[in-house]
Length: 114
Image (cartoon, rainbow, N blue to C red; front, top):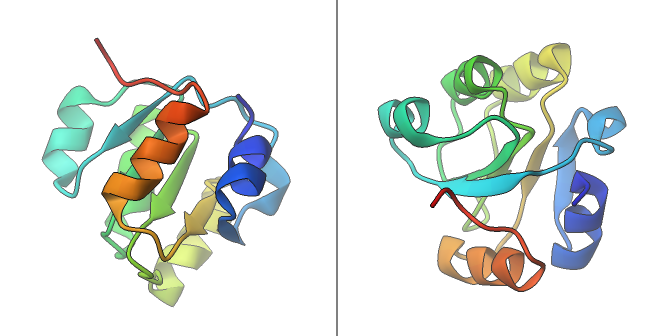
């Protein structure tokens, strides 16, 4: 499923790399621990988190994550948005809690690692 479809279906606000929304989301991963994401996420995952600092972009690049969604109305630091823009990593935000957003993504057909 393309990130653009997720943005539209889940009513996400795109804050960076809007030109990269044609990427495929192969699955999803939810965690707020960077070390956990580095150890267990998969290439092409969309990452659900409440972290807002620039290190989330570095992890996304390292793991080849297709995009990051910040939940609970969190807004990224300006440095995070700038870094994501330069790395072509879409950052999206929602007021939904992680549990609700993950339920919507699951209903759209996205799955996590088995």
